[in-house]
Structure formats: structure tokens, C-alpha cells
Length: 250
Ligand code: ADP
Ligand code: MG
Image (cartoon, rainbow, N blue to C red; front, side, top):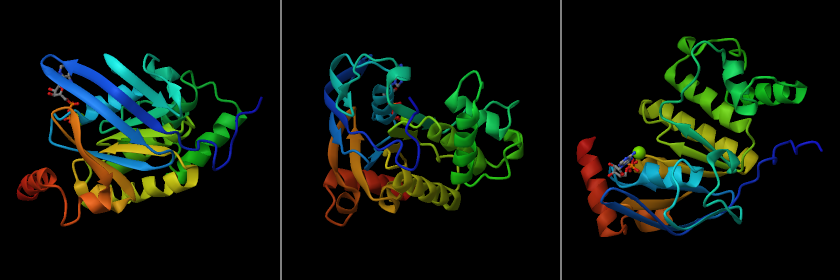
């Protein structure tokens, strides 16, 4: 049977972490959260608070010691990464230097690059959507940092998964480029309706897109809600303290 295609092929899935426990040595983490399908969640918090671990638990790169993880209502607590309906983009996007843009994107579709016509169409469509049309045969070294992240996003798009995880994916870009990439992610989200979970160092990123904010400290979510409310003047005092620290860092 043909795979669904078109703008809504990857409608978003809900994400639920139900009393999920995990630890690294003496760092005990505990996550309870619910993310609505087709919404954008922004994860912020100090370095070492467990943001990447939270994404890795959702992606399956780490396995919960207790509790349950549900994606789209399916229990994936013990499913390997390949069996989970998610794609992930990292800060270091691991493009293959010897492969051109089209091939790097094609890997998201078929790891052996044996692409059929439908795959090739999906690859060109994704390249167009991330604004790289005309650069299909460039190698990563001939792209800017922002363009390389666009390739990584296109590679995630051709996987057609209902959840996209971004772990500080734009952290190495300057503010203007970062904002441009966030706008791209916002447009792609409107187009595909995928659920997005993004870790960011910059609270203003959570305001640029209509997102629900989750603030982590010491392996726990200590505040959550609409980013607009949490980042308003009436924000919780612990968040104010974190933001104060960030402000003086800038
Ligand atoms: P963040 O992404 O918020 O900076 P992480 O999720 O990477 O935080 O890390 C959370 C905690 O887990 C930190 O205390 C970190 O030192 C520890 N940690 C992360 N990865 C590992 C690992 N592979 N082995 C042991 N400890 C780890
Ligand atoms: Mg991290």
C-alpha cells in the first residue's frame, strides 16, 4: 500500500512521559509531562539540568528505568530508536562530507540510498521546503552553517515522522540566522502539523514560535505552561532567577 503523502502526511503525535525515572550516577531524574499533538514544546533550563536526557528518552537513545513513555498513544518505553515515530536534529548535524546535499537528505529516506522515484520526489520536495533548491549537488563544505542545518532538517523531513526533536540545533548560529531557522521550523510545523520538541538556551526562542515551555532544574520539570505566560513579568521566581543569570551572560 502506498505511504500517505502530501502536506499532512506526518500529522503530529501526542507525547506523554508518565512518572519516568532515569539516573546517571547520583543524578536522579524524574519526568512527568504531556505534549499535545501538533504543538511546539520548548525545553529550557541550566546546563546539566537534563534537557538532552529528556529528548534522548523520547527518542529512545536512553531507556527509562521506571514509568512509561507514550507517543501517539503507543507505549514506546522499551522500543529502540528506529521503532519510534521521531526524528532528531542535533547541534552537530553529522552530515557526510563526501556526499552531496541530495544524498545526505536521501539517507533519511533509505540508509542504503537505493531511492525509488517516490523517494527522489520526497527528497527534492524537502530540499525545496528548507530553501536549498539549486544546491542539491553541493557538498557540506560548500555550505554555510545555517545551510548545513537546513540539510539536517530536510533529512528529518523525508522520514515523515510525526515528532521532530531539536537538541540545541541552532546553538552554533548567530542570532539572526537562528531566528531565520526558527521561522523555518515554524513554517514547516504549520505545513506538516508535526509535533516539535526543541531544547534551547535562549528563552526568546520559545516566544518566537507559539510554544509550551517546560523549565527544567536538576532533572525535573519545575515550571511549565504557555511560553508567553511563563516569560511574562509574572513569571515564577525560579524562572526569573534563571533568566537573570542568562541576562548577565549576554
Ligand atoms: P543538559 O542537556 O540540560 O545540559 P544533560 O541531559 O546532558 O543536560 O545531562 C544531565 C545530567 O546527566 C548532567 O549532570 C550530566 O553530567 C549527566 N550526564 C549526561 N550524559 C551522561 C552520560 N553519558 N553519562 C553520565 N552522566 C551523564
Ligand atoms: Mg544538552
